[in-house]
Image 1: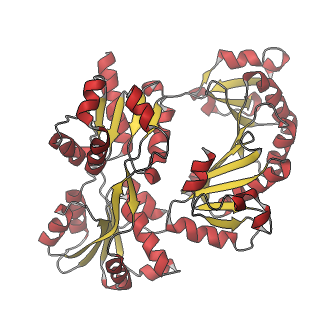
Image 2 (image 1 turned 180 degrees about the horizontal axis):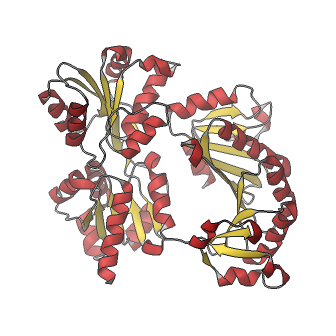
Image 3 (image 1 turned 120 degrees about the vertical axis):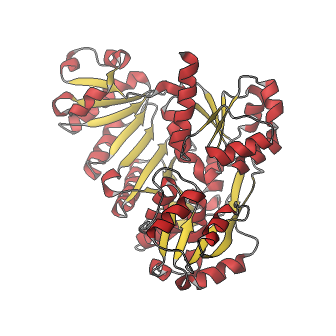
Length: 479
């Protein structure tokens, strides 16, 4: 697992002055990542540039000692100062090293948070708790521990802070919050008590502390659900399914690569000031555009005064990550037809120049609809999607052997590529209970062309709508 994480990383942090003194230097042949010195005075600028170019995986590796915890928290502080949301995973059990994998998801200031996840099977809880408390009172510590260590850890936090809020992931996988009752908010009424964890704190502490188990949506409990999205888009979908109790099987069947004709991309970027609009149709289109953009320019202001449109909320959110406003985005129907209608409402498209940074295999309908409104459209391939040939999550054999309850498809291309690798018709014969979930009409159309009728289709083209469609189907079967 560590090898895979390192291999897939874009950035690895180290904190020695000389990287050759760090074990990570010895692993440099495993992947093609950038080394960033945590003690560099320019680290904030470097991090801003890199995270602007791509939704990078950040990995921090160090030896296992309390000093390294401070270094990890230093990284938290840097990400916080950059207004980046972050999630840090720290394990003391792998190679006696700390593995910190940061998923960088810029959000509004109000939503930003820090999460330090510590996997400790018996450990120096007191020292760790004190370091965290001294570092930043807003940092939330989530400890994965054995159940019998729970009372001790709660007592440690009680001693180090008059009012505390900490979380645990038990060895059974349950997420549990422990709060000081005297400082509890009314929001705790929305959570449910877990007798098993209250039992851990039986005795005199019962009057002062209660354990509250997170209210989980167990609508998908124990269901094996396959996610087929490209690796860079897996995280949010997988997490949403896991929160509902699903066993997620990650099988990305596509990966994004540079287009065959990069010269056309450079030409379009050089002439950005000649465009009136850029219309982004997906998260991939946003990321591939800015990856190429920052390879040519160092200043975001070089994008000029062009107006920006986005098809769908996820695409709009990714644009806002680059500190840019979205001028036009559909509210309900996240389709090409809808974005054209919204643009036409905003202003006449007659003789306006529009750039469509898309995939080589993008549907030509959007371009045609814009041209029918009188726009001059440059439909340029900024990237291409190619079949994934590497089983990066080691899930293929497990899936072939045991199947799944649901397979989710978020585009026609993912359905086609999945079918070419696994043969959906054969799978349904081998595992008759497998159901297919489709994101939107175009995905369903591609499935039907292969002779596969989706069991559910989302009402809108969002991941949340797809999950709700699955939940609705399950609920109707139960009732």
